[in-house]
Length: 251
Image 1 (cartoon, helix red, strand yellow):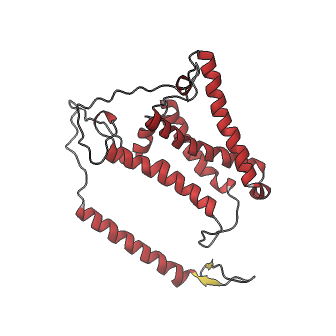
Image 2 (tube, one colour):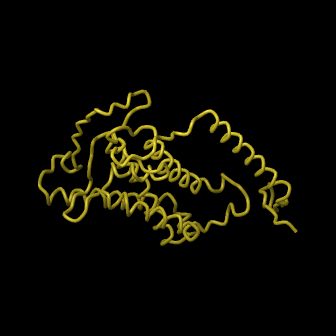
Image 3 (spheres, rainbow, N blue to C red):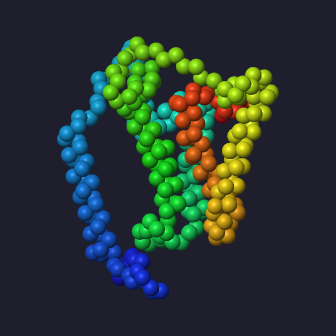
């Protein structure tokens, strides 16, 4: 007997429909549509192939494969230790923790949006904003010198951008090193503490269902995801280089 797919209906009971033909037919139609879109796309747009690699000529800019361009673009906004080690590790660990942190049984075996709004939006934010958007920026907006070019701008290989990047404490008039280190620590710590308190207050019902530890880990991962976007905005909009400057690390 084929596995059944649960379907939400009105009333205390729930009807069941078989995988064949209902689910298989829907998935088959989606696969056909995707194949048609990809086929038309590949015919209309030529693959962006370049000339054979020349060891005597370094391309400008030197770009990683498209699936790594998101991480390469993060290097503009963070130190290499974070963009090259911490961020990829958090991505892998966060994906591995999903089955253990998200124990909500709603949505298992059937498709729903009304019951899993938060989970769907968090996943879309991480995938579309922190991965796909950065890849698009790296492919289409990063030109010679790894400068940021708008789609209507000419990629001038001689373009020079005079950046006046400053640390956040310096932007607030703090000049001494120890005071800047304390100020940056208070800003970063306050962001996580305040964000955790607000989320706990907003999701008090969820706290009873998943427990304190699961909720705490979910909040920290979410705050890190949002913090990456905040740092990108600070860098592009206000030329803020670091928020927290210490003798051992910079954030």
